[in-house]
Image 1: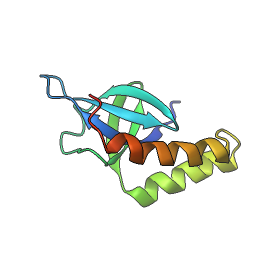
Image 2 (image 1 turned 90 degrees about the vertical axis):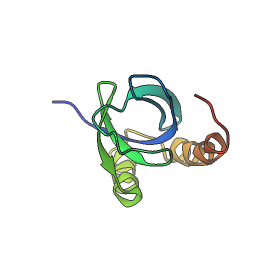
Image 3 (image 1 turned 45 degrees about the vertical axis):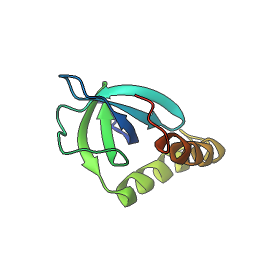
Length: 95
């Protein structure tokens, strides 16, 4: 069974394959956005195996990340640092 990870889209490339740069609790990764063509910078997506599978509201993403903290899978300090980094990265184009 795969567990989807809630992430925020930081930037979207303009190539033929829709790729986005996302923040996975402080780790920056590139994922395919082909399954969520309506996604835009700042949106939250649920990723599995390098693909964004669905859009999430900010509330859904926050609730999911809080559950990860409750389960001990993410340290609260790391989550807080990642949230601050998101805003800084969104302020500039990194793709």
